[in-house]
Structures are given as structure tokens and as C-alpha cells.
Image (cartoon, rainbow, N blue to C red; front, side, top):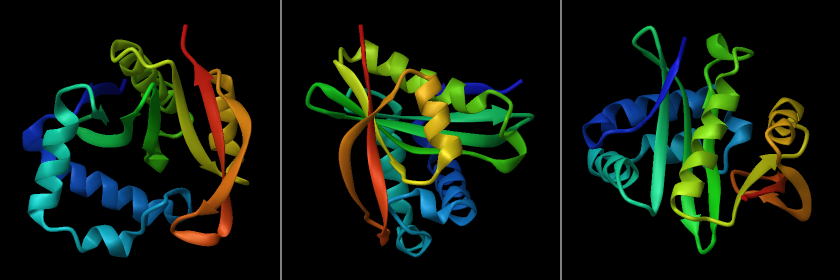
Length: 163
């Protein structure tokens, strides 16, 4: 059984490792690129981990199973909204409910920081991800824009209002 916990500041190297694994495995699912993030120095990763470990501006959650990190998700506060970002589940852990657990963690955190809704962008055609989000209460909006890492693809915005 996997556990999902907020990253600790000293886990910056782990953050780098899982983020690069995600970009290697699913490059078309992210707004960033492997090449861009390979160029980040240790200080950037240390800063990201520290900023995501505490406080109410951003959070990163890691999923672990058997001592291995098998998933990641983040949340970033933007006004009254939390933007769900960087969602990834390792191929070995897909279909186990881990995606739902990661999304639930961000939704719960969004409630803690008193957000009104959680929004996300999903690449058009990523049916598995869109279906997961719909099952978690997200609805497709009319907002569409080019994927930053590949402007030939579109992303659609999904939103979930919080009670």
C-alpha cells in the first residue's frame, strides 16, 4: 500500500529524481521539458523542496511504496484557487488508486488553505487523466490553450469547486 505525504525540505534530491522520471516517462503531459529541468542546479531543487514543504503558498506530495517514490503531485495557490500541478504516477503503480489518493491530497490541502476551487490543465487526448479528474469531481471548462512545452498540442482547464 502506498502512502502520500508532503515533501520535506531535505528531500530535494528525491524531488529532482521523481520529477525527471516523470518528464522522461510522460513528456507530453507536462508544460515543462526534461531538457529544461535537467539544467536546474542543486540550489533550484533545494529551493523548490523547501518552498513546497511548509506553508500555504505551495505544496508537493510524494507517494511512496516499498521505499520507492511512485508518484508526485503539487498544488500552488493562485488567489482563491489552488492549481493542481505536476501530477504523475509511475507506470508500476498505475491502476492502483494512487492517482485518486494524490488528487485527494491536493484537494484536502486546498481546503486547509481555504481555496474556493481546485483547477488543473490536462492535455487534450489524455483520456486516462481526464477520466480520473472527472471521477474526482472536476468538470471541463471552455478554457483551452497551447501546451507550453509543445504548442502543437492543447491543454484544457478543469475545475472543482470546494464546499
